[in-house]
Amino acid sequence: MEGTTFTVVMIIAFAMLLAALVLASARLLKGPSVNDRIAAMDVIAIVVMGFVLVYSVMINNSIYFDIPVIISLISFIGTVAVSSYLKHRYD
Image 1 (tube, one colour):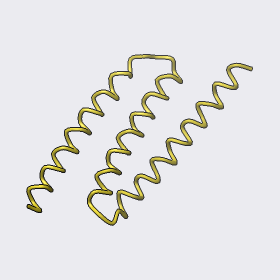
Image 2 (cartoon, rainbow, N blue to C red):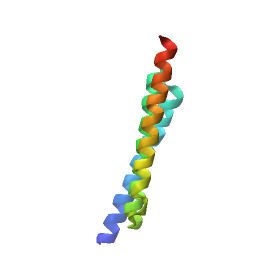
Image 3 (spheres, rainbow, N blue to C red):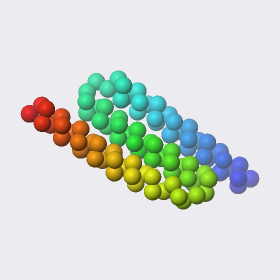
Image 4 (cartoon, rainbow, N blue to C red):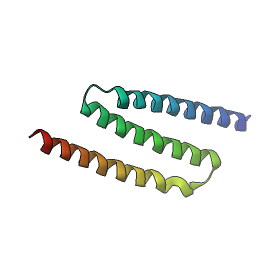
C-alpha cells in the first residue's frame, strides 16, 4: 500500500509541476510587459528545479540535488543581467 501511495503522490507532483510550466510558458509568450516575462522565466527555472528534485526523490538517488543549485545560480545571474540591461536601456 505504501508504494502505491508514493507513486500517486509522485504522479500528482509531476502533474502540478507540468501545469505550472504550461501556465508560466503562456505568461512568457503572452506577457504584456517585459517584467512579466522576466518573472515567467524565473518561475520556469523554479519549476525545472522542482522537476529535478521530484525525479530525484522518485528514483531515490541524491546525485541530482546539485543541479537545482546550478539552475538557481544561472537563473539569478540571467535575471540580474536582463534587469540591468533594461535599466540602462530605458534611462
